[in-house]
Amino acid sequence: MRARLVALIVLLLLFAAAALVANRYPWMQWMVENEAWLREQIAAHPWQATAIGFLVYLVLSLIPGLGGKSVIWGWLFGFVRGVVIVDLALTLAAIVMFAASRYWIRDMIRARFAEQIQRIDRRFAKYGATNLLILRTAHTPYTLMNYVSGAMDIPWWTFIWTTLVGILPGTVIFVLVGTQLPTLRELQARGMWSLVDGKLFAALAATVVVSVSAHLLVRWNQGFSGKEDSVTND
Figure 1: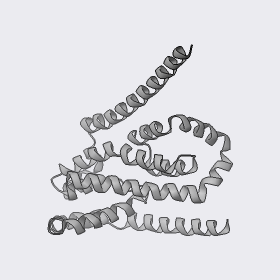
Figure 2: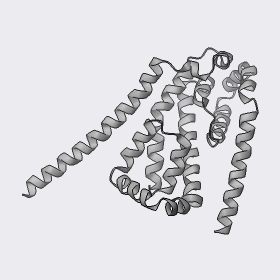
Figure 3: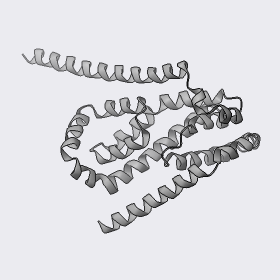
Figure 4: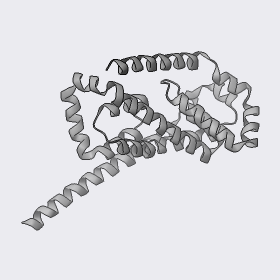
């Protein structure tokens, strides 16, 4: 227990230091000033650039509060590579957070909120995968969901595949928005919120509607099958 506590403190300090550097260092400004050079390097060294882009996105995904990365990666790498990098990096970062929560803070959370966690566990035992998919497609706060999921009785594989699939629609939308940017300088001047319009809201809402509809269809089908079995048995 003491070793876990020390490891947790070290991990939190590393995260705090990384967040401080990421928020204070003008990384966006550097990319704006070097956007032509970045494009040239990615075109000249596609595989190396893809690997570096993946690692950088993975590290940034572990730091809360750094939004807009998917749009920038869409601009840098194009649609297909951008989607692959973002989806895989976000999934791997989610697995790291899930593991950290399950190893270090699961027992504390379950001891403090035992009754509430048990109720959630019972519901997830019945509709676990579809519930996780809905939460992912509904754009539930990414970091919070990873740590909370680690504290619950969610199987590893269920968490992994629902994360990989659930974040894909939003990733596609934001990366696609990035591919339509003329320059990063324009994005910096206008701000990230300038990208939010009616079409973007509609696209994000559609992903939620589709996911919820699929969940309701599964529940209806399960209920119908149960009734059918009951009639047959009678």
